[in-house]
Image 1: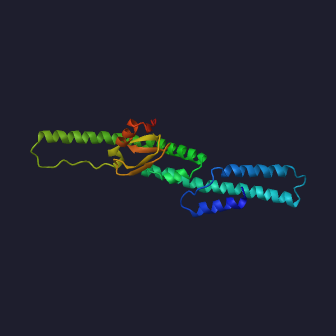
Image 2: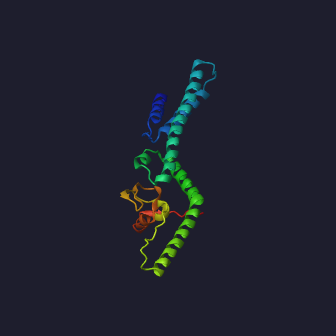
Length: 217
């Protein structure tokens, strides 16, 4: 793996708003090259020679460049995980551009964000759902008392996520894009972790192409 090739990857990552396609063994080759340089450095008796200085410069440059590549990509991957919390969607093409280690990191980050979100927010959502049920029960009681009343029942306005309800699911196979009951378009691939409307999640459970992820509170 040549240093100049790696520098081009850094430039491409910085100029692109999305992940770029990189070789899946780019970091492995970078590590192999570093081992070669370290091995050669250990065989040099006097580091004051020109070759000794060149070796140290190349080792430093290669290490910095590999770190630059990972940092640029990590920023994008973290942003994707945060955005998915709000949109319940992630671009499948972006997922395919991740190398295996990055995909594992992304899944861990997304799972951690989802767990924390459920812990911080879902308790309040449950209380709101109870309040809505009380309101609806009260309205039904009033309609029974006044069946000829001309006043229309007022439906309480609720946030979409509360009225629809979501399950955190683990996707077991690629799925063609579909519209959820919340009006959003979902395009899912195998091993995605995503929050889906309850009705859509139930369909996937029944077809054995998704598993419910139970999140402790």
